[in-house]
Length: 257
Image 1: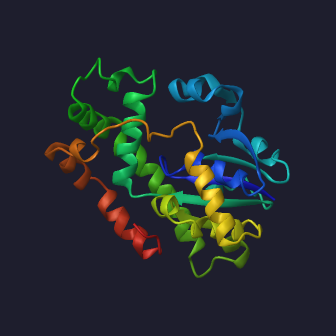
Image 2: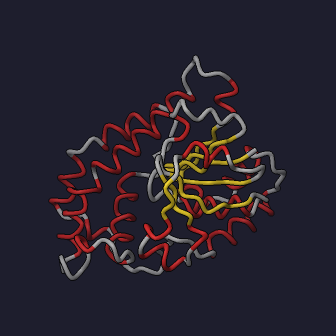
Image 3: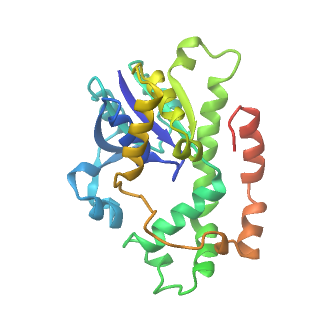
């Protein structure tokens, strides 16, 4: 069995991948996209975080995923489970989601304060954080995030549909990233889904180790007043976007937001 960690952006992609390695799986470091992948293990964490494209390898996703060996994992936001050209029957999907309002703030912080290839959003271009956040919402934060959130919800809708087969249901495990950050029992649930025996004490230990590990997009060291970013203009953009209705729909699918 191989694993694909399928996440909404900024919903613990690297954290969950690191966590699963503590359950005995091997992280390839492959961040999957449709026509390429990022070979993140070929570069340092710092270089990956600042200029992700240095790790890009041009290759269609199907042979990359089919090439995963037993107990290996890859990850990404690309909706592998929705693609009919990838009937990867040996792969299980750990799917992570998060409140979109938190996710867009997290990505904004990553783009503005860590990445060197996002000059359109950095402090030299736009000195004020709130003005920069508004621009981010207009150019990326709503459209890009909504499309990826919508695809994850579409997959969830297929899994919980009455006509879904038991095999299809058994291949997917959904987790709320925010809940995972605070609740070690979520780690035990992931382990059980992947066929790993683990008690709560072991899950708590793996949880602590993953929380303290450095990953590509970990932002705990970047101190920003996240609530202050939500100016009246930013709130207006978000509240009139498709996100509020999408969140209502997510709840009908059994996702807690």
